[in-house]
Amino acid sequence: MDRPSVTLIQRQAYQFEHHYSAAVPVLLSDEPPPIGTGLGPDPVELLCSAVGNCLSASLWFACQKYKDDPSPLRTEVKATVGKNERGRNRVQGLAVELHLGRPSAELGHLQRVLDTFEDYCTVTQSVAAAVPVTLRVLDSTGAVLKG
Image (tube, rainbow, N blue to C red; front, side, top):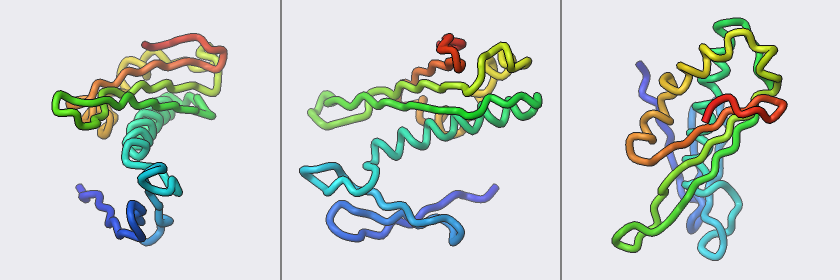
């Protein structure tokens, strides 16, 4: 399996360009003020994006196997950041809410998907080994299906 990679190049101060493959646009990250200028996501936001993207893609893939279409998906990830025992900021938890774009009644195999999709999420399962990740899945009516 290919080993994913990214090259970071400092633009200035806390701003870094993230270079992926040639076909992918460069992403700019930055720290929020007063440390940085806030011109891009900070590292905690990038972690939230990675976890949210992985869960969303895993759910989408699992639904597609059964020819179900949950789109449009909307995923919100909120990080809790606090001090550790040495007074250093650490990500203490990630709370994920994955919103389906349809009522659950329109998705014939949804329960099967909900029972398995998290286990196939490479990033979330890796992160969850060190940082607690909670997940709620809601359908388009607001009904809580998981969590």
